Length: 526
Ligand code: AMP
Image 1 (cartoon, rainbow, N blue to C red):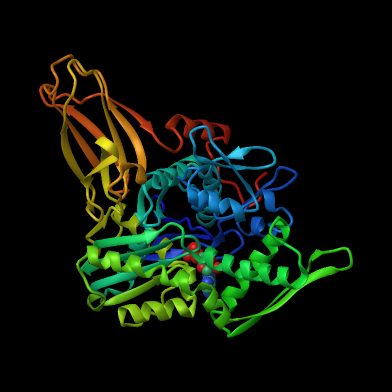
Image 2: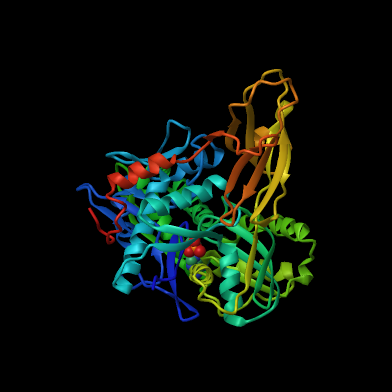
């Protein structure tokens, strides 16, 4: 019997779970830990390290240690987000020929998908060692507001390491599933998910085994890392004021400060003050310089209050889309490690007027929900009947003068499809171009370009005579598919697709070949 596995591929930490009977259980990694740092490193001897081992040597090898690659998955190099990330990352980013972003190591460049596949490959190895047998089928989670490129890139990453993705599901939906299964509670729930790199709010109705997502909203660039960076900036600025030395160009020092900042931030969820000690962080002609600084919870809160505040408009939009008020939410579930921060809990409590559910492990619940979803797909979960999720972004096409026509509205229940008739505007026109976009802006150029679909081989005819029905579909993974039918003949119409981003299927296969079918290897795998 095949194993029922779910993976939460997080920005900072990842987690893997399986279904034991009808209960989801976390699979420990090779070091015996419940979660694995989403970090990959390449040593000077060419050894590849994943997880804790990679994290441990990050300080001495910052240029070849890759953190938070999830923030780069499915992104363009020129995007403001990637450009902003470049300023802080100790590793280098370069532009791929198709405009995507690549991670540039001392020896070679790798796509974010390849690096994600190394993390997934490690988790696969952990599961195989746990079960003593091969693992192939898996449900993988993504942030709810991930667009088509980001979802496809995650799927490609899994394929590269030899995993067959049964379903891609949204992280907050997975958390809702695990919670619902565990408690048996019915009602309207809000899942507030603030992880290492992303924020999602999802509203769902749970009713006797039917999980109906009502609305979702979020921000790909809001997470625990931003909190760490605030503390880092505060320390760097303080050091500059005291010593006149600028640490910004010193990647090694920044890496040490970032680790210390994250540690201090975590501690301040449980204590009111903590000391940050970084001896020999720099030196000038006369002396070695050290950082020794007390950080209080109050200062941390002042440094990051606006980040917590940034979640509010997203919650409001999700509530408006679901036509609900905060008072109609029966349960509030916190997911993602950053929700351990007392200021985050306080904000959520104030907003909804109720205390979030206790006894949920925010680091593990998403992977557990993914395992539950895998169990549903395998027919191993009896009490659950149906999961109805939604698409986070509107899907549409470019029209004249940079216009945008929405075909499928955001928060439509998936899978879904809509058909639109296309024709020619010139006599004997042989091709019709359809530029498919995702987003909410009325201007085409401000939305995310998914692909250009070209209907080719149209028979010569006067303008307006050919009739081609184009069906836009969003499948259960949240992925977009387009097909076309010639109305007269009823035949499938030929389409040429030029995706705006990502690896082509042939490239995925090529990478798999070069890796020997992506065999998962232990944390240190040369
Ligand atoms: P996740 O991606 O859900 O694993 O969330 C990881 C994020 O949660 C990282 O930014 C961590 O620094 C943060 N985090 C973990 N534990 C705590 C804590 N006790 N207090 C504040 N943030 C935390």
